[in-house]
Image 1 (cartoon, rainbow, N blue to C red):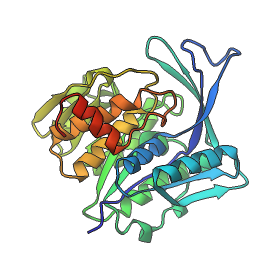
Image 2: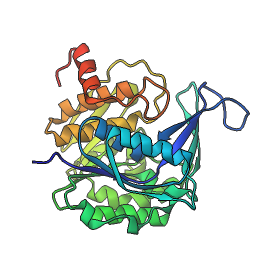
Image 3: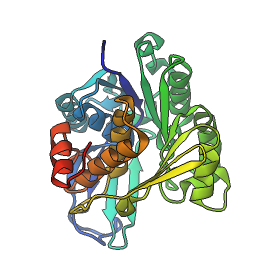
Image 4: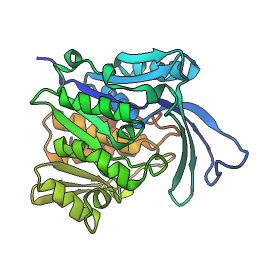
Length: 316
């Protein structure tokens, strides 16, 4: 019996970061990078590092930044046979500044880059025939209409028993909240697992607060994992909710930690862990993911996660 196969798709970009806090992007200063990035890229790389067969659909340019991305995914064990190299487009780039209040500021170059060329013809239904899990994000629905259509085509091609996870990952820099709400709704309706960050559940459901929004989704039969950073996560399923505390972490850079968390929760659920156990496992991965600068540089292997949890006297 083959291990479950996980697929993600969407923006492929490198991230170029301010290494110091409180250095705005409109001022001269030092940058570090390029770091492989893209929310769905971080997710799928983490799935592979945790030991499940993983594949990706997307595009890079025929340039050094594209090579940076492909090398990293290959090293992590991701099947990139559905990633296209487009010589006529450059690889996407995000510039990232971090601030001492926990905020971040991004400038993206992706709509006219290779990442923005994703279209329905990238999706081969035959390649999805043995899929067990598809992960989509609101960020990738918002790049452009052809990219959204590609994501919806992949969703429609899912085997009946395959599961879908959705991370809203709302980016006000890309589209307005109202536009993103409209874009996300068809995916939310199909999703088995929803992974909102602070403010997103309330925003997308129109509820008074995140807890009410998460309960609304949970009442529709979905598992909802509210990502809460240093506070861990809260899982909602049916009428129940479980608060899962975070592990102590030596935070250097939280960029991408939520995507690593989502990947770990996917792996745990596919392996049959109960929700609370899966939440602990995902929190451990998230804690390790923040320990190095760069969105994927802290992504742990399975052995590293298990050693960390054992050191914390937690049984997986």
